[in-house]
Image 1 (spheres, rainbow, N blue to C red):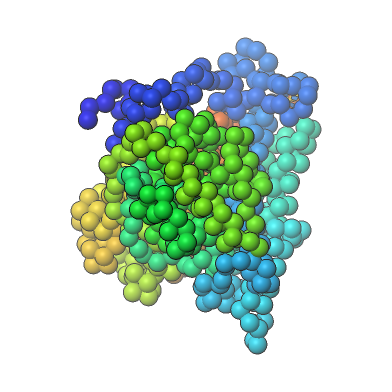
Image 2: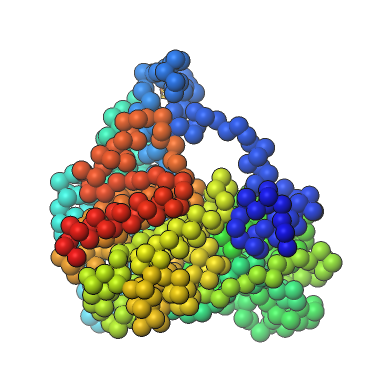
Length: 625
Ligand code: SF4
Ligand code: MSK
């Protein structure tokens, strides 16, 4: 089908193009329409030079040097931009870490026997965590060990002194560097609170000092809250292993009850998966004329249930409204993060129910069925039942599902990668040393309506694999790659000869899906393992990171902890820092002399891959390989 230039400029994904045309035809507003209506967006905000941290403002610095150069209190552009960035880091780290805390809570309650439907699925990982935490496990049941482990993790959030336990996973030389720089986080919550304190009116005005605290806070996220989220989810729901599934909007079914799981946390979604298989509910669906119950995921809750249960993934961030506009969705179940309030407006044009479930995230106009672990399965059944009953309200004449699906292989936890390598990292290290694999790239992050949907993700990843760089990914990048077929072993045909041969020998794709946003922590663990095996720091490795289409504050924290950990990281969307030349220079240049890595910014994915490849080649040269 030929679409207008306007639609082709919005997305390169055929299912998205089709639904954009459909929504135009139905006159339903999308995020792209709202972006257009929002023009021109505030230039001060884009540069990061506006401050409303006290009521003497709002203040903004004139970027052209003609108007005010100081806020009412005397704050400079450097102070204001650095404070704003630190608040973004704090919000991102808080989102990830609060998610981690919730998973620790579920493990605690499960160990205490207070939850319904949960069990400890990966006992080996629980035991490994207990050892890492120094917990004596002899003669203890796995439930008692779970309680002890969860209590140690709980304490990590409120600790007043560091280091966090998982910092023991960081290469020694980097631990020492962080110690020297004062970057070792104390408690996770403490660092986030301190961000808010420092950015309060009249506290920290030194952009370098503010930025260093941003790095420390991000470390508390990556090596703290996010890592707890990942590891504890693995204990409760199982550590992912390679599996096959499907992606894109064509995973919605004409003749079944369609339920979309959207958001970030696996606690509820895992129970919904179980409830959707309940014979009683399937029988009810059949009674109403549906052939069954079809669960699909979206964004990172989707990634969580894809990685562990093989639940198909319907799309990434920019597809949430479009999925509802298929008219085939009985319920979109949402928890926290990346859920646009506008989904309620689109749902109002159809029979779809938006069911919010978290006490932390309510959506005006949605149905709220609050989720609590103590009655997890009962509530999950109630939610699925509401969706099934809503099938009767579906207007079959308005159903329009794009016929787009793509197979994928996901489930590459660090453990799964090591297993695919035959039980040790050696084959990977040898391939890196021989040059068959030039290096590793972590490509992560969101979609952003300001960038052509999925284009930056795919172009960058294709360029990298062509140049024999093995890509690991998470979040919405992984979903973009899934839809384009890059998560299949057959995608090795698109890779350079060296990487192609390695992938074929191991039967793996050249792009390995490692999970949701919090699972960027898996990438950190993998990098630490490679660095330790080579006896070097992470900053010495031929690796680079990128977030081609990022939009969320979580991405600021992720980018920061990658840089703090020694990974050169390129952003495809310019962060709001250009209003401070000094801070921009610190992030994109000076940081390298401090933590051995820096940020890059490139809005063109070809430029982005060029910079990453150049960096990887430079590191190979320094390592003498
Ligand atoms: Fe203006 Fe200073 Fe108040 Fe910010 S803290 S709003 S720069 S007076
Ligand atoms: S869902 S944070 S849009 S990756 Fe994790 Fe996607 Fe970004 Fe949300």
